Image (cartoon, rainbow, N blue to C red):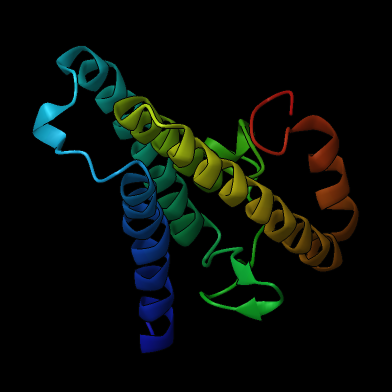
Length: 162
């Protein structure tokens, strides 16, 4: 794997898995994690872990089967582009299972923090990422044509129905 691609995956990890939850924690007033209610943590942890698992499964599947990744940063290749349209595995449930998993992870973080400010960060991130997804969808449509259009008809953007 080329250094550029490793850096792309590392950048994604730093921003989406560490950076955004850290921002959510910061705007929530930097609560001491040991002081968070245990019941909320018991609910939040499995949700966050499930989200991370879905994202990781999607990344590994895309790399192994698709021989790349669909992620562009507003038209600029950050990681190697996929050479095959993914419609099986996690991509059978969602056209964007990596991002869906990340959203689920953030929902776990939100439950743990229980903060309106963290919710606002989540809403802004979701809004920005929807713009990113629309950009990626145009590229996928150009790359895969009717095959992608058919896939769009039968598979939701984030979950089966949405």
